[in-house]
Amino acid sequence: MSLKDIQSTGNKDTRSGFGDGIVEAARRNPNVVALTADLAGSLKLNQFIKEFPERFIQVGIAEANMISIAAGLTIGGKIPYTTTFANFSTGRVYDQIRQSVAYSGKNVKICASHAGLTLGEDGATHQILEDIGLMKMLPGMTVVVPCDYAQTKAATEAIATYEGPVYLRFGRPVWPIFTADKPFEIGKAQHFSEGTDVSIFACGHLVWNAIQAGAILQEKGISAEVINIHTIKPLDEEAILNSIRKTRCAVTAEEHNIIGGLGDAIAQVAAKNLPIPIEYVGTKDTFGESGTPVQLLKKYGLDIPDIVAAAEKVMNRKSNS
Image 1 (cartoon, rainbow, N blue to C red):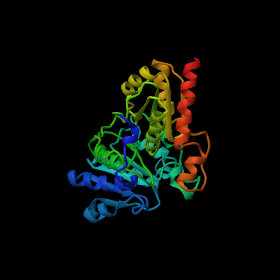
Image 2: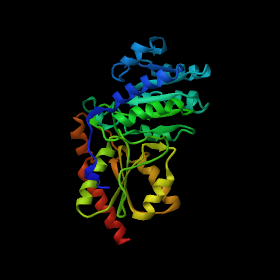
Image 3: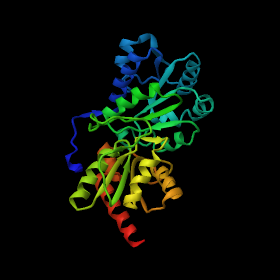
Image 4: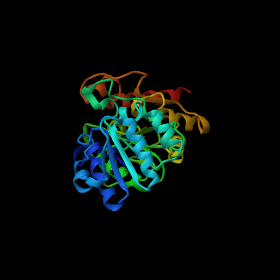
């Protein structure tokens, strides 16, 4: 498939996909409840509150309390979705998540908006770039990072019927929609192209950038295989290995620190099964700063040209190995 034929069907923020998805999940399952730490508007919960006011809990700026309440609600059979910014969903409440949710396998859905650099102008204190690593290290925690509005909506609905703790990560900016016609399944990678020269694995907002980069590579005569790894854990190892057996090199692209994120997960699979050269597109052991999403992605090396350059570099390494 030619990647240049993949077109956006519109533009919408992924957090709106969450807001629409939780309403659909609640309509189907009366046990779905929503909790927020003073950020109902930012997490697009207005429709949920309108339809299900008795299933909404506003805990105020008390994120640790929110996680503890959610853990308790599961004992009565409820399916709690906790909502706040990704920084407050993980870093601020890691002990509560570890002890009250992960350790005891509680069916809590930790839904985290405004993740990564594309939070933008709010700056480094809010742009968490370590959360995927924090959450995937917790035993039994499922980690899902959808790439656009449609996939975020689908993932939000899917986790309601997925037993066990889940971390769902999404973002703030308006972003292209390009997966509306593609099925979503937790733990199953999504292919956008078949290729033989280089594998490009991406998650979140950078899937769109990876598709654009792959199209540029195809125009240069390079056969790029672009795969959306929307579920970081459990990882679709079969899809990863099938791809790198063909291409013998890979690029990973994520809006996250290259330490502990998608890149590390891919590298671990490769190291255990088929060692290959890998190039990482992500933040390089750094905090972010204030700026527009576009400015920040460019400055920190997460832009389309950066993925193209990484693909060309890793192919050169493969040729010289």
